[in-house]
Length: 359
Ligand SMILES: [Ca+2]
Ligand SMILES: [Ca+2]
Ligand SMILES: [Ca+2]
Ligand SMILES: [Ca+2]
Image (cartoon, rainbow, N blue to C red; front, side):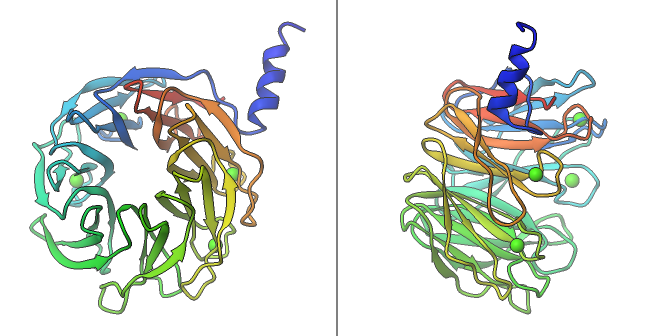
């Protein structure tokens, strides 16, 4: 009985297909706020980079290895107060690059990967005021990655198009609601061109921007969300070929789910209660049933919530997993190459990351 008990407890608390080992912790810099996972040194093992928000502390780089662990590699410089981090191969050299949004210096930093775990010094691109998010996507269809930067204090999104000289040229500003914090790319109608969605913290709404024929975006359409929408993500939850939206409502302790209707608009939102102060979301098929699941970082609850997708826009009861103090960002990646997604969570108040390996 004593041997069986832990398994019974895990089974009850965590649900079938969502079992994780005890968290492994790694120290970061000050106030880790955002995380991205990718194979930076091309050894086949997933690595991670964490933006340490404030006081300014750059990016903590962790490299993965065959023992399933991420090991601290070093600190990378950025602009001031990096609030958000993402990664992509921006210059198409086959090596993953890092991009941070630096809310304290009104710029983004691009660190080009050398493919061995080292990066070039940060190259800044000036943005609007207090950038809080960057989305990477080929928006004009020339196969080169472009950037959308969320300027929270300017109530705008700036679009920069990638050009051949490995630089980015400003194309367009989009007017958002008040105090946008987060944006995501999706395919909201059936024209196969990427559209944008943004969450506006102060105006308690989201905004949808459809791309038009020349790769630019049309004016935004506002739709309701909960209170203090702080994060937005896209996924096709019901697999009808049209992306849907999920929004973290920081001030109402809820998550809003909006179903893509196919012509570019969305249904009114379904509300799911989360933990306290949901601040960030990741989407992925964690239990490998073919349906996207949602993971919510609850800044005020010290746990993440997994919402298992049923494939019909509804979600099973939340599975809560304790991770640390002030969880603020989540990466989904298969660290140990067993084909099952693992989770990495930044804990903003305990200055570490929690690594949750699936079992
Ligand atoms: Ca690696
Ligand atoms: Ca690259
Ligand atoms: Ca859908
Ligand atoms: Ca699933």
